[in-house]
Length: 117
Image (cartoon, rainbow, N blue to C red; front, side):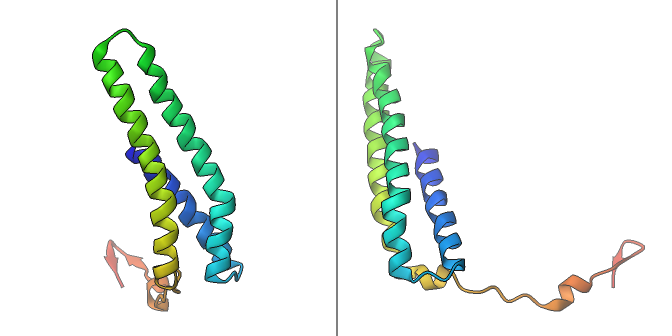
């Protein structure tokens, strides 16, 4: 369930980064994310929840309890991802998409007998 939420969040962030590099505004970027990527995340989360709920038909009581708990957790994870990730992107999107400044001296590193010059 944690992997589902992390995977969906990374999917959102990679799409957000791609669209930001194309010059999209922050609001337009998040709106498009919710329309396109939100649908994909919802479907994948629903399929995971259905798979967990499917184990409810097993005759073992322990597996039935686990099936209900994991199915509900998968649904809650999808709802949390669909509500929290876009909110964080709207609030902190500018900080997450800042440019990285790298010094040119790092590119000029040479190895001389195992020592860095």
